[in-house]
Length: 452
Image 1 (cartoon, rainbow, N blue to C red):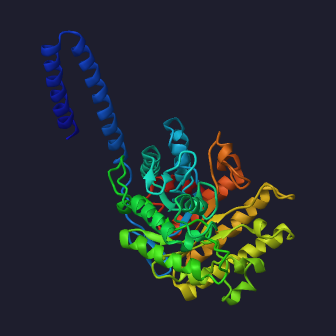
Image 2: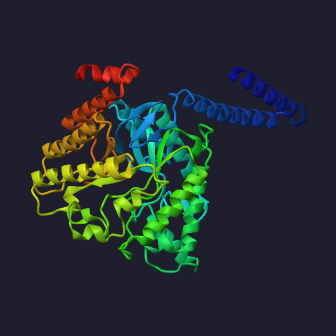
Image 3: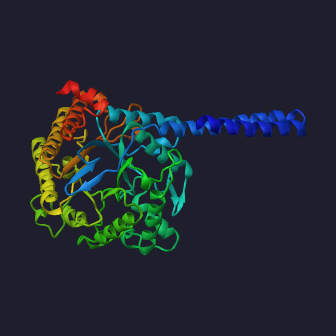
């Protein structure tokens, strides 16, 4: 097929060239020939790129049945990571090798899901320049991320907007409405209740979900490379601590996404705090402030169109007077509480979609990070062995060498921290054995054969 296509276009441009020679003497044929060569190069270059990406592993959509994820009829448990910067680092083609290197490294560690931003609202290299206006260069960067992830056998958890200001977030939406004279309030929380802003966001969601990837030719909503959509990173609506405003927005937007895309799973992006009506607000929340943020883990996660719950783990951000061992014990309590909620009440899987330990703590030692991560991964493993709802965890965050500007006090190049690198691979192998994947996956077979 490719050979026939090449012959067809070659004959077509040969005829064009002959006409130019006949009509225009010597100058035009030279220019015409150069143009034809350039066009052929670009055309077949694109064909070659697309052909390469179609050779990736065959993917099926991840599904949910009760408290478990399923893939091809088998339970799926996730060991994964965050690299929020993948799209931003793919806009310039010269920096794409780092994106590819990160995805390859994740696969070599046995990781299966990477969480990353599918948004950049306003500002430098914005995907959405203004409401409904998109930069095609940046969209092609996201196309590349999805296509490259598929090549490496990695699925993506794509987040659609930020509650925080980096990469635009809800603040940018509010500013847009205010600048256009249609905003009801300058409060960031008007993102959740202003009809104009809701319309902006719905248009954004529709555009992203129906985007046709320029490399694979697949609409995002039809691409199983995408593990799931995440509505919003760490939503809070502090102007309404009752939680009603955020709940209304979550119900409307989750139903809207499901009306467009019935293939993919959907989660919210919660931190996991219990709201004012929950009895666990006093026994499990880190402190009293956590129940007054306008979010409620149980109420929000119980929305029918939300397929799985999401929780974050940052003990050193939530507590400042506890010793490390006390923080680690708290993390165990925090995780067991949410797994219990999902096992017994919500009847959905729960993923701990961010976890980390800051290297800026006064008493920080790399061994503490290893101990905390082992605690988190052991809890996931024990839940998975019992076929429980603890479906996986994603470390915040991994990057590769030469990317310090994208790092923070949680980030690391995993292979530069041998204990973390080893621990990550061991956890991947333990989960793979539960799922019976090692013998049917060449990479896992090689990776895990040394770690029995």
